[in-house]
Length: 111
Length: 111
Image (cartoon, rainbow over all chains, first blue to last red; front, top):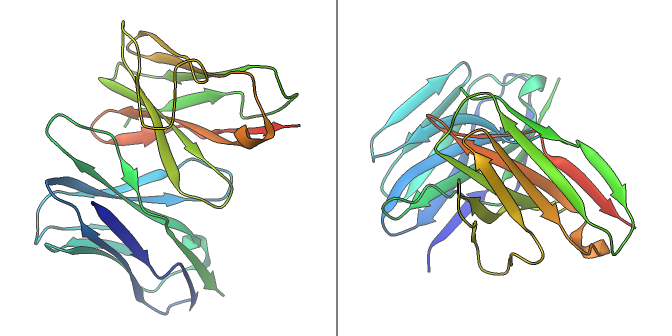
């Protein structure tokens, strides 16, 4: 059975304290792994898509990486405005574009 | 990236009634989807909205309860029928452009 697990469920960081969020998967036929940010009461905001092991993408203080079994979202020197829930999602199967979401990591950055 | 407008943003409805949620995309997109996010949970795919044909529903979701229309490549509606308190949730529209983008969601409360 395909499974994706996000860890930790919640993370509290001091402003400037770098860390990583994890999305581990046992999905056959992975065609893409996605990262989203979701603020309370809003829809998910697209961050990154990763397609193959070894791929990396960066955006401001965020960097996403992908291996054969997991993806990391690295947050460098976070600020309070980075506080949100970070979701990973994946797509499998030829011709399929439906996303299956993990449960998310709720990040709180304390000033 | 595509911009998705969803309305209403929130509503409080009586049980037994129906609510139709509208999703408008500012450009033509190949695929549109509807998701549900229950309180404190991640997103679950309800169905793929197919242009000009019946929607494709995921396990646990049926057309009689969640009828979906997609008359063209920029617009879709989801109706939540014969509502009960268990239908209280956030309903999200998603469109596939270069990536998968989301509307801001409709927060539905059934009383």
